[in-house]
Amino acid sequence: MQSNFMWLVAFLAIGICLAFPAGEDAQAETIKLESENTGDKYSFAYETSNGISRTETGEVKPGAGEEDGSLSVQGSTSWSAPDGKKYEISFTADETGYHPKFRLVA
Image 1 (cartoon, rainbow, N blue to C red):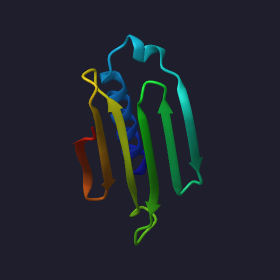
Image 2: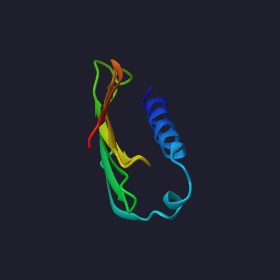
Image 3: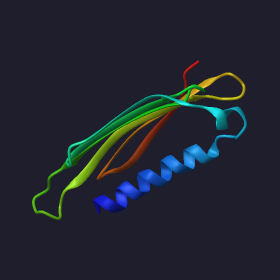
Image 4: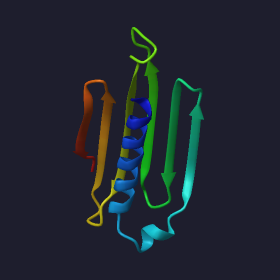
C-alpha cells in the first residue's frame, strides 16, 4: 500500500514537471534543496532560479495491524506562469484520498 502511494506521488511530481515548457525553464538551477528521511517520516523542499518551489512532508501512521498503516502527506508547489501570475497547488493525501487546493497567489 505504502509503496504504491509513493509511486503515485512520484508520478504526479514528474507529471507536473513535464507540464512546464522548455526554454528558459530548461536553464533553471536549483537554489535551495532540503531533504530528510527517518523511515517513518520524510520531508523535502526545493526552489529553482525560475521561481518554482515545492515542499512536502509525509508520515506513516500505524494501524491496528502491521499491514494496516497508512501514509499521510501534505505539500505544496508554486510557480509563475508565462503571463506573470503566480499559482499554487497545496494538497493533503491520506487514507481518505488526494485533496488538492489550487489558487492564484498574485
